[in-house]
Length: 377
Image 1 (tube, rainbow, N blue to C red):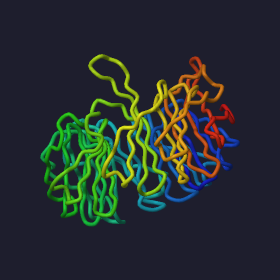
Image 2 (cartoon, helix red, strand yellow):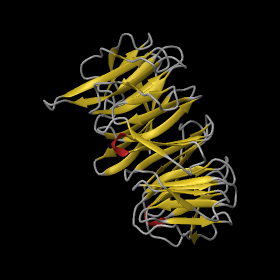
Image 3 (cartoon, rainbow, N blue to C red):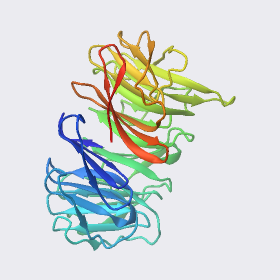
Image 4 (cartoon, rainbow, N blue to C red):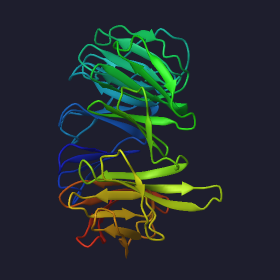
């Protein structure tokens, strides 16, 4: 899902493109071919791309009102799309698929890489019009300094999948599986690698000024000294399946999820920070208040829901105490994903299975914490 403004947004799921211009009070649906779309890239409010299975890339010139399928010349899954400007763009995916365009996607050409294998390329990142990088599932890293005309392989020192890469203040940081972190301070030519937690696959990288954050399946790793040392937050829940995160302001935040211990009993988890994520405390929450999604408002009100959205827990004191309510009247739906849309009217968008049919459900948060069903698409 990609929200361009408070009102205008797009949701991409399998063979549907859903558009709203009024915070999901109403929606428009656009049917695409029956291929899974998993990536969205918008260069501006009008020009955007979606990509997914069977080499599919679709393009919009009018903010999603109309879409055209582009001829990519590949049938492999496209994992990522990145455009430098309105003309020059790149796409990567399975089996070392790497293609480029210089005419806004009208034509695509295969880009040869100096390697022979069938690894998946996961991410593309350009830090300016000339310098870019592509990373893959076998630790591959390829650099360009001529806007993608030529690419050079760098030695990462790992064969672990590189899941995410970011750039900040002259440094690349990459997150890999099995707790491996990669860093480069010379535009990706040379890399250092080290392991911070073998049992933690690292999926995402984020920066806050010079602080580095790495996200894994149950832990958040933080470094304030350029990666020399790391502090782990939410320690003790490394087997958790964290489902939601939301911040009310720069300091107050909540993380929710479920934990399966050795007894195979689900433990509903909630952690709160009051200092911007430096320290976290485990909160006491009501029974059956399964933490699948959480939304934290600047006024200190917070709400968390279970997977069926038939029970919610509500707090009016920054997560200190919680009260349970009956949720929206959609208990037959099995919710597979929950995403909060932050707007002045506090909408929750969930992807649900109604029998064997996938549906998109829009819910609104009432002032007392109740959830009100708005629409089912």
